[in-house]
Length: 542
Ligand code: NAD
Ligand code: MLT
Image (tube, rainbow, N blue to C red):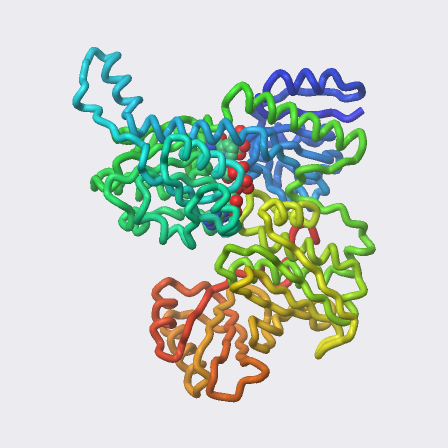
């Protein structure tokens, strides 16, 4: 009989549903940590949590019994998913149960900020009838900027439109057609959007790209009097920079539901009069808590009764023999996705995968899933894996196509992937050297041969003598070591035309180093692409 451990306070409806199921033992033990948590998990088959418990590697160490963790909510950042995968534990979440509640809370904060609801309330109940001190702003005809137009971002947009706001947005995975249907003015970057907005709200996960997304420079680029809201994850706005923005008068207000460190009961922001804060209440409604608790229980019950894995954020159901034979190409496909998510500049509407040579005769569906997982993994909450990646891509309206040609080209097997729109396309081609060494052999129309790992500096330049030397000198001045180097040009081009260079670096170049590179007259453009280190496999491929 499976024992299910409930590690956070979840809605009674969920607990009652689980208790009503035949053959399940239920233990409710909120507030566990350290050895107590570890020991409790050792004697459980399944667990349900919210964000109040940290399930890290030590909590799962040596656990041979636990099969599945269901998160009643969206964010799974409190669960070490790599550790869970290594332990063979499926992690599932309930992605839609709290979407409306969080969108509503965002809008409540936006309106609360605009009309000084919290300070006016305090002032009145403290005996002051002050009708001048709390002059607010109307939101109608103002511009709301939304970063992250997934489930919650889109619901916030609808609510803003109902209040007659003009909505601008940025999300690398929203196409212009989808944005047009949603009535959202799609911007090509956050930086492009910031100078226009009166209100800014973020609805992305916390990732390396979104951490400190809004810092001092971004605040300076905004209109004076802008108001900022965060109901996603603490750390997306730099909290110190917010305070500086408020103190300088640049920002008219800041509303936060989430904080870099939680629980957060002390912050210099709390004493500023234009700050409105709630203790991570976005999903705290009866409706949302009932839905996520019931959904989490249903996920667990179905898993134990039928083996069904839904909304998994860490595991792909693949049989071990296929996994072994395709491991090298799964790694290549995944890396090509990670590469193209950074090489392309967003607005992807379709992806085309061309399998050539021996690989064209294999089960390429899995390779396509591995590519999709790589393409999405830097922008979505949790680890995207080969079970959910294609669905997530199609959910975003992105079309996928596979082409197969079992005739060998220059390599016994190769994979060429193009992503883009009808107007713009980015292409990357790769192969495997030996059993497991992924190499990039084509970039757009350029032919080259380069490692597909670590920090890659890719630059296009005029094919004239001295460019590579100049790059080496600039990087040397910034104390950056070049580990590998490769140059290439289009197959049809003679020397002297456009050329491409790829340097694999031992550290990431600073903004100043990039500025110095771009300032060189021979360089047309450059990009830093962060790839997994050599030999590192995604957790679902370990
Ligand atoms: P979602 O996966 O549907 O949407 C996230 C969107 O962010 C995606 O469309 C993705 O393309 C976009 N994105 C990722 N990186 C980006 C970047 N660098 N720039 C622009 N866009 C980027 O997720 P969701 O359900 O809408 O949830 C969004 C966030 O809200 C999650 O982090 C979640 O944990 C948080 N959340 C908070 C609460 C709360 O109680 N405050 C409740 C629910 C969810
Ligand atoms: C979530 O990610 O679902 C929210 O942050 C809400 C919660 O933690 O319960």
